Image 1 (spheres, protein in one colour):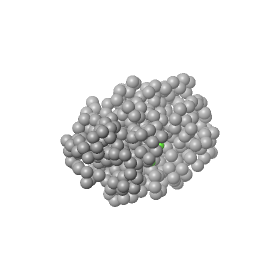
Image 2: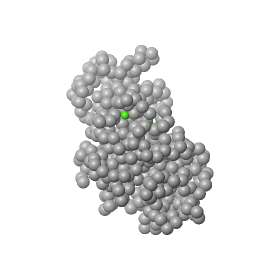
Image 3: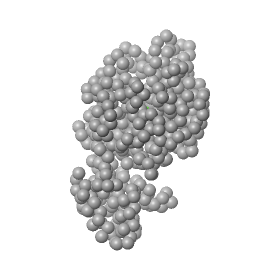
Image 4: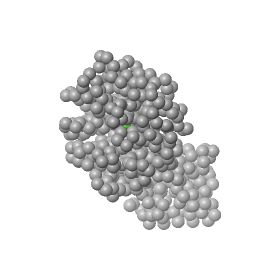
Length: 433
Ligand code: CA
Ligand code: CA
Ligand code: CA
Ligand code: CA
Ligand code: CA
């Protein structure tokens, strides 16, 4: 842990303070936030620290959003101290805490490292969004990572991160995959993506042999939503049915059943609708245990039955604020063991971390981690995530976590996806095998 003092506070905070003088309380809070980001956050990526500063400055600027919404209890305490004992004294306390190695409430989550990054997506800016892992049962080393470039389409990568196929099919935002869909007497893997150009569901089959994604949608599968956003798939194995969940930025959720149609096409039939109060995006279905996990970007993660004929009664898994998540709540993924055990991984985008829960309800919280610099650059601002427990090629023998990286550095480039061996996560959080 690097001990830091006042001079290492990023210039952005200094400039912001100089430009817009505020009370000692806010000035100290800003500095504290910088300390937290730089010292305790595991943010080895300077860009991520800069993003944190910008976000924080915006929050302080607009007090109607709640003063200091991103700060910990310790920050608020220090800010209050500053108001009473003065900025200089509070800073001395602050530096002491920073140099003590960020103990207590600032304790940093463990940091793991990615070992592979994919080729950057084709679009510039905030473009990479959501990955899906397709496990090739017959040749695990030839498994695929399907990544959404939300400005352009889908990109398909090998496990070494090289590009295998590019599908410039439009603004596809979220993507997921399920195998075992029967089409013309063949059992195929189906890839689904939320298409923001047409508010529709894009569907592909992974062609056996060539392992190419081929469009199998029966025309443009319109949803009737007006701002389609998140998407995840669900295979009800007992009934042999495949579903796609999609949501709208206004909170609407739809469940569509996939159906084989003549000519080797696949259609989608709306079978259930419900609504969240706030903007959703990330979701993940647990095929074996029958749950759907949904995120509201601002408030948390919730669980409800995935079956099409069940009531949409939400149970809280975890919340932003007092929980273990910091808005936005983004990607959700399930590490599935055969016996029903496993874990749920959630991207806590607001503080560049991931929270892990037990797979089985009540989804007990197990810990958090970050992805720092290693062989490839660390990860910040993650949107989508996916994870598998399948034994893939080394070093992914215990499974693979794939995450979107909001800032691709070393060298600076367009956004990409990072691959983390699950073994790293298991060790960092001391999870049982
Ligand atoms: Ca993003
Ligand atoms: Ca996904
Ligand atoms: Ca989002
Ligand atoms: Ca990065
Ligand atoms: Ca990089």
